[in-house]
Image (cartoon, rainbow, N blue to C red; front, side, top):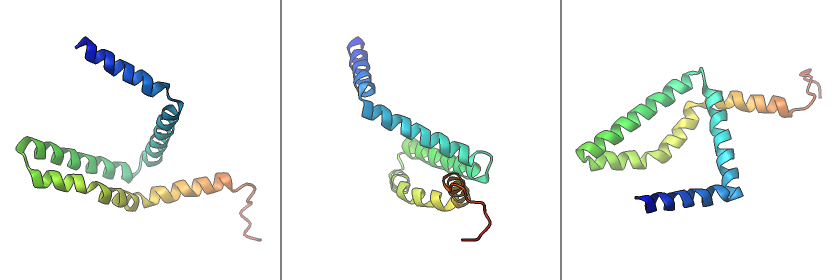
Length: 114
């Protein structure tokens, strides 16, 4: 058991020592935090919570009762869910892109004249 813990510890140290991996982890964490802030207080978070609960309950039931078809459907529905999430979160994505456009737009006075 001690040898297994030593192997795991050395693997973690090697992974964390790589600067590219650290950058990847930090960027991913930043994106996830930004998305969480973006959907906080919206109906999108309720939809996401409902999807997560349905998916987790289905996965647990499929594993407990050996439901191979349900398990297969859950595994293969992940690509579809990624498209569905974009559709479900369209208002939040639109708002975020609008905010990015305002910040990066420079000195747009909003007068409408070109």
